[in-house]
Amino acid sequence: MKLCSAFALVLSLLPVRALAQSTAPVSDRSVANDSAARGRAAFEQRDFFAATELLCRAVALDPAPLSYLYLARAHAAQNQLLEAAEDYRHALAAPAPADVSPSNEPVAEEARHELTLLEGRIPTVTLAPGDIEQHATGVRIALDGQVGAIPGHAISLNPGRHEISATADGGLQARATFEVGEHESKTVRLAWHTNGVRAQQGQSALSNASSGARRTWGIVALGVGATGLGIGTVTGVAALTRYSAAEQSCPAGRCTQGAQYPDDGSAFRALRTISAAGYVVGVAGVGTWLGLLLTAPTANPEHPHVTPWTPVVGMGSAGARYAF
View: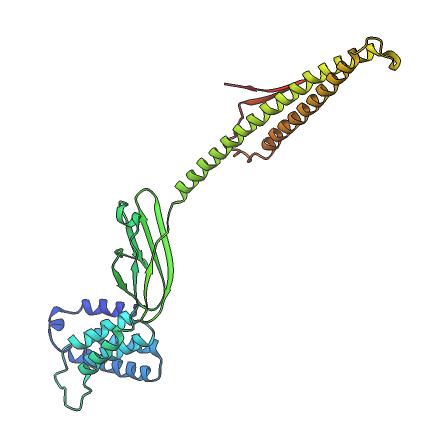
């Protein structure tokens, strides 16, 4: 919260002569004294927001040490420790009023004591330097939107929730949020990633690689299936030939040619087994290819993907045609 910013701007517009003097003009001092008194009263009533606003107005018109002391206390009560520390330093540096008397509050002594206690409460955060922070070009790191954070250097900040964001050449980005409490020192490490455009390109490349792998496995499965169907067909025909020969040797179950039937029968059973295995392998291969084809990712309608492979399945054969 920067309530004093507007009043600081007003102060910067005052005549140089007034700023050079140790005391403000009488009219300004009168308004400042009134704001300061109301600000101290608001502080005693624990209305710290109103106290901060009134005291900011007071120090903008007359930078009196007592006003800065109470402004520091109001900021500290709202956990705005960095602003409070700055106000305490202003209280120590501000010139004392010309009409100061021994009965006045020893502002400098109290400001110095309270500042010492406050400095121990201020937390710090250190950005752990990684390879990207050390070697990437164009690294820009911001803490709570303020650019200039340096890796490896402790940064003082107010208690509460904060955010570190960073960018670097090549579309690299990083962001981290963290909580920090009083007296705490924390180290934060950034996790870098690419921006949306490059991430989309990376996903597209990954998708293309996946599609290429699926296409390769599909070709292999189709080849295995075609080979299995071919073997099953050829051995099936041979088995039928052997079975026919065996039937001719033993019409009506009576063998007329000696040992010819056992040889044909044995060959028939072996070829039948090979044929069945070939068909099983063929069906599995073609089924796998169809599964890969049907479960392939849907193509972008703006950039449809046309496969150069065309399946060719015929009687006792299967294969694919590639269009160049």
